[in-house]
Image (cartoon, rainbow, N blue to C red; front, side):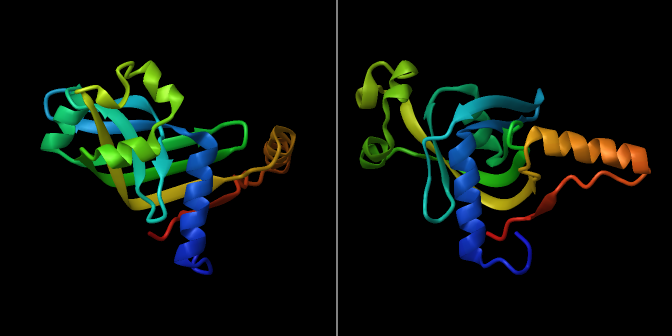
Length: 166
């Protein structure tokens, strides 16, 4: 975050925001089609800042990651006016114990065979760079500040913005 935040405080902020939003847009790259984005439900963010997702081992995103494993994640909470942009290295982890640890009933909607589904694997996202935008005031405060900027001719202050130290 800002220079006066410790790495521990930065990680805590990242964990809190990821856990609040839960759904990210995961962007991968494919030489033929370019950038591809899709929503992903976060299974967990661990104590080291790695973000975990369940996925189908045979999906296009996995094929794309096998060629180019640098990905982008975007978390957006419009109501709270907070946003995260994360660049990361993605890898597949086929670890049944870790899957069991992260499993929840919502995942079963996508993998009805549960932990025994042969397509099931974990996607580990290890952030290398992250930025945040946080103007977590109420919508009325944000609207008032926008209006005030317009009336006074001054630039709108969109709140806190910075890098998250990883």
